[in-house]
Length: 279
Image 1 (cartoon, rainbow, N blue to C red):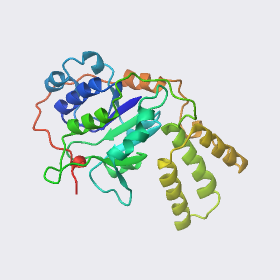
Image 2: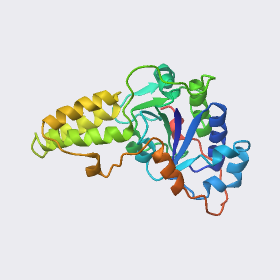
Image 3: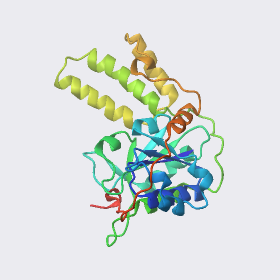
Image 4: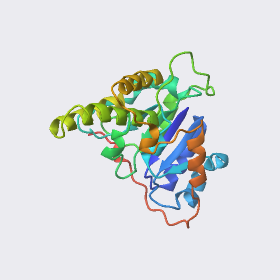
C-alpha cells in the first residue's frame, strides 16, 4: 500500500489536487501532519479541487507528528531538492524498481513524504525518512509545484492493478518496531558499554543513522532482540510508551481524533515548494 504524507501543508488547492491524484493512481492513503491552517480540509478551494473524490475526503488522516504517520510504515522516502548534511539524495527514477513491490503489497506500506510548500521538509523530518529522493527537471525550469511532484511520484508507481498479495518472503519492520529496536540498542551499546561523552554520542549517532535507514525485516529485528536480551536488556515497548496495535488500529485512532471544524479563511497565492528546487 502507498501512503502520501504531507507535512505542514498550507494550500487547500494543493491538498485537493493531491487527493484527486491519489484517486487517479491509487489505492493511496493520504495523511496530513500538522496542517498550517485548521480550516484546510473545509476550505472551498479544497472542495473545488477534490471534486469527485468526496468519499476519499473522509478517509484523510490528520496527525500531529510525523513519527505517528510513519509508525506502521515499512519504508519511507522523503522528497527534497536540498542537500541534507552528508545524506545522499537518490534520483527518484532509480528508486522506483525497489519501491514498486512495497507500494503494491497488501500488508506493507510505502510512505512518500513531502514538505511544506514554502519551507519544504525540515532536517528533523528528513532524519525520520529511510531514504531521500529528488525529482530531476530541466536546467531551465528547476521547480515543481507540490501537487505536481506528488502526481509524478504516484504515476511512476502506478501499476494499473489493485493491491496484490505479497509474494513469499520476509515482511519488513515498521516504524514503531524500528524505534523500539533503536532504543534497545542505545540502552545496551551506548549507555551500557561506553562512558558518557564523545564516544557515547558517536555510538548513539551510529545507531540512529544505520538503523533508521537500513532495510530491516521483522526476522532481522527478532535476531537483534535475541542478542540484546542475551546481553542483559529487559526493555519492553511499554517502557517507551509504545502500544502494540492490532492491524489498522493506529489509523482508526487517528481518524477518531481528526477534527473537521473551523471557519474557512481566505487563501493567498500558493508557493512552489523549495523541496522541489534543484541547487
